[in-house]
Length: 253
Ligand code: G
Ligand code: G
Ligand code: NA
Ligand code: MN
Image 1 (cartoon, rainbow, N blue to C red):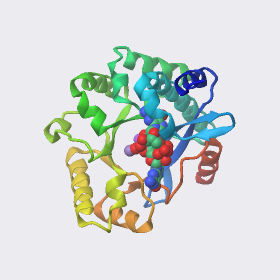
Image 2: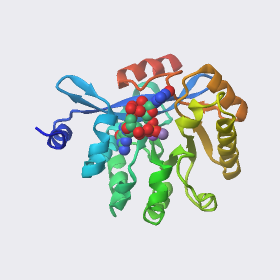
Image 3: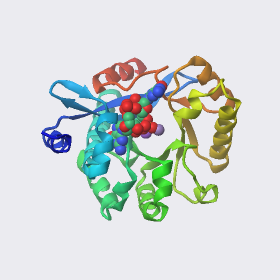
């Protein structure tokens, strides 16, 4: 079985699973959201996304997989709402090519209706590079998603080439500082300059800002001092199966 065929079957056979990584407000240490990250349970082994997402993107299967991820994340959000009163959102990664589907927004709206969750229960992450690659193609859908009440986060921010002027007109809610800048915080002065500029930009545009890939207390402290209070990374929690998030939510009660 080649990998492509196996991946098609994986989707049919429900072998894909979502792991969740908490987003933490460092002032309170509380979970204020989570990012859904795909895994493939293949023959009892958990395959990381790096080993199958690139192939799925190359073949186009990623579109179907992403719609599955939205459905699964919505179902999970509903369950956490009912069990724990969870009222923040789950972020799902969307590849930019999914925006080529003219029915994308309707499809997402229908998924959320069918799962019985409000649009704000789901947040969509799209990479800066993916966004800028096809701005004309993506922007109309972003506006429709925004009108529905679904928030958009720009992932890996700082690694692409955003037109800053254009950014002011986009219906986005969050900038997610790329982990490469976070990694170099404290070692190269340029990275704290970039992080500081992104935070200032977010402020000026009235957007939330979050840092990903936070692994060290020193990184968290620099981020906090520069004005970024929401962090995601191994320092707080790895991506984990939903049962483990239950424990986090239980503690909040
Ligand atoms: O979970 P992390 O461990 O290793 O993920 C590796 C890469 O795969 C990241 O770039 C992440 O954005 C991507 N990825 C993980 N889950 C999804 C998903 O559901 N959809 C898309 N498009 N990318 C994902
Ligand atoms: O931006 P993207 O969607 O690619 O981010 C998700 C990826 O980041 C996943 O592969 C996830 O496992 C990884 N990740 C999450 N926290 C950390 C961290 O603290 N350090 C590193 N190196 N990777 C992380
Ligand atoms: Na992401
Ligand atoms: Mn990212």
